[in-house]
Image (cartoon, rainbow, N blue to C red; front, side, top):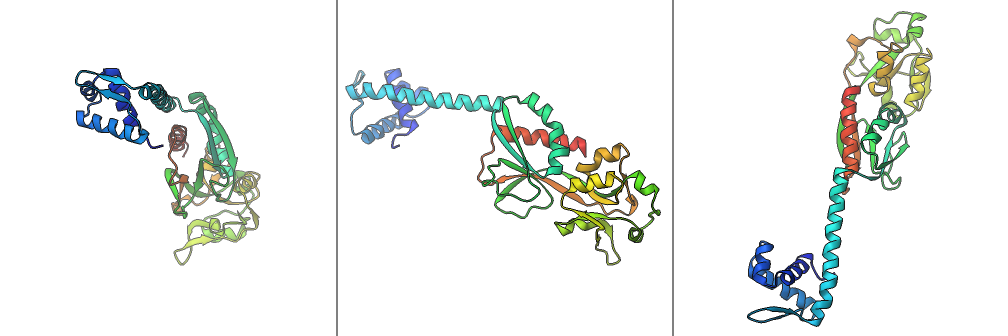
Amino acid sequence: MKTTLEELLAFVTVVDCHSITKASVKLNQTVSGISRALGRLEDKLETSLLNRTTRRLVLTEEGEAFLVHARKILSSVDEAEDQMAIRRQQPSGLLRINAASPFMSHSIVPIIGDFRQLYPQIELELNTNDHFIDLLEHKTDIAIRIGELRDSTLHARHLGSSQRRVLASPQYLANKPPITCTEDFQHHQLLGFTQVDRLNDWPFNDENGHLLHITPNLSASSGETLRQLALAGEGIVCLSDFMTHNDMKNGKLIEILPQQTVKIMQPINAVYYRNTQLSARITCFLDFLSQRIKTML
């Protein structure tokens, strides 16, 4: 499109005001600026839109025809801007969220009811994936990731942090030897991850001052599976607070060696591509989730 909105607005305003001078005042521009805009418009259209005399401006036949279209275009732009303003006040549309299964179950699903009451016009699509995904390939607006980010093509918003702790059920601890130091773990059943081996680095210092790396007696790929095993009394597990805060609060899981635990906080980030323009529905969801995470952890 060769014609600009500035030129269309100048043309329509001049017609409505019957004067270039009055149009310049209304648009807060100079008289010469309005005249140049009209000149550019006529040059692009290769026709005269206005006959100018010392006393009045008269539309040409071509000007009369073009005025109808110009008004429609400007009206459509105004309507589109009004709709965007409404969306900012009452966000709407489809929001596609991806997160690891445990975070989806323990942190997102519990707040969905309250979120939908606040924003009933937002349609939610919740998908789970325990590995990093291509956001475009999976048609995802935002993904929630736990841990350090390594993809520089993504933009991230930090939502909070979650501490990793070593835990076991009261039933398991009641029937096993007491634990007074990390060396006692050799007499216990340790639950760990089959994938992402660094998750088997527990938050204790070994003899070299590094994190204590454990060899699990029973492994699983899912943190939720390990949580369920721990709740069933099958062993000791190391999990993040976002999964277990309710279990600890209710006494279903008990922290082991809290005084010796190294405080390791896992960042919780919402990620999206850097060239993504954040819509109102994305922003309001991230604001809501960030506030709830603060109360949960």
